[in-house]
Length: 98
Image (cartoon, rainbow, N blue to C red):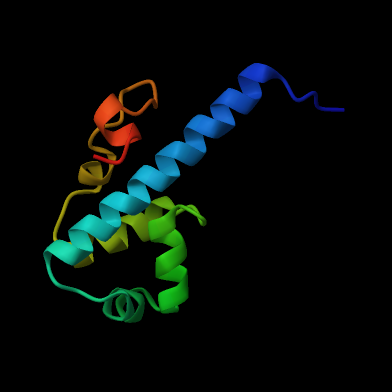
């Protein structure tokens, strides 16, 4: 039986925070090029609702899908992680959404 430890809960919160951060970065890049959620969704072969879930951090984005998104948006995959430290923590500015 797995035990729910404080350290485990903290790691889960950090992962969720990073998922939200990556989703916000995707949205910012998409808006920067003037693409709609529908256009990105069509490129990916998913619904625009799925793109919404990615951008809101509700659904995690797989590595392969993230590469497809980066290609469509004309950015590097690393750009989505700007503001995330090597230990997986967000810098103060990105944690507050600035």
